[in-house]
Length: 382
Image (cartoon, rainbow, N blue to C red):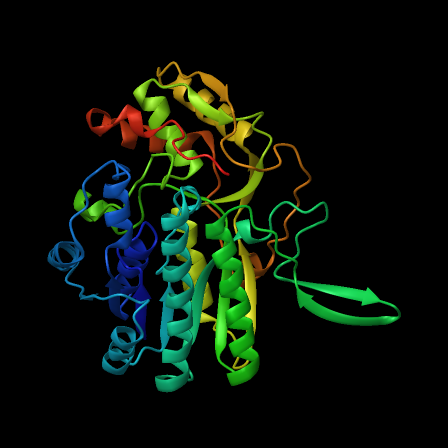
């Protein structure tokens, strides 16, 4: 299969490219290094320096014999994206090409504008490149569970059936995002649904929870193939941040009471989910929405798990509640359905003590590279 990975330099994009190439697919990755540049601008670089895409592809080829084509291009530029579709003619496009940080989008006007312009233009251009050049292509779009917010009802899998005044219909589940970044993802979903209805394109929208982990099946061949492991307050996800804090001897910073509940998944399960979506594509004229996570935890529960695992290996981990820099409910109802991917064949890697201990020991290998000033929150909502 010809698979085009947009945002192929990212925390998810690069492991996805390796995963599909290692399994015999023809893979092209596209990136403009936006995330790398923003990380440098905000002093939020990854724990370990990652080679650029051309270097990564060369290392991957040397250790596996497999090839990944690399193109440096801007997906928010329609002509650049069109050229790639005409050259590669993908059967599946996996769309990660967005500014991925909620905190970054909340710094100020410039950051919000950059997030809005990049994310919506990239999605809009993907849609039109598919319509014009590869109308049978399956679009796999990375959404986020953050689109839903924290409603006081069960979160259904993308859609909700409504009865009103004796009549009924099916609608997209109401979205109430908590950041500008998450709002752009809501707008992505609306754009996709509009063009699915209008042109009959086929789309799978994966509503993913926060991801954790440093390793996949392909990263063991060479440490330089590791994903971009961010642990800072802007680009790092909460569990990855806790892991580094535990190793660095920094108290695990819990925002507010720590009652915020979300659905989480292992990086290896992200790859499983994307492959399942790829191998079982949406039908023509279908917007298939799947909630992509394996377990639900509160922030406090995550911190306690890391503390317990860290203490078991002698790290002396402590917790610290700090003022919440975000505007969000800290105690709320949260019950999200996520049966679709399980029914399609997902075999979850659950967050056991052994899994946390393994990740902690991996981070310990890079203890000297940790910058403690990157951990505490530097961005406040509003």
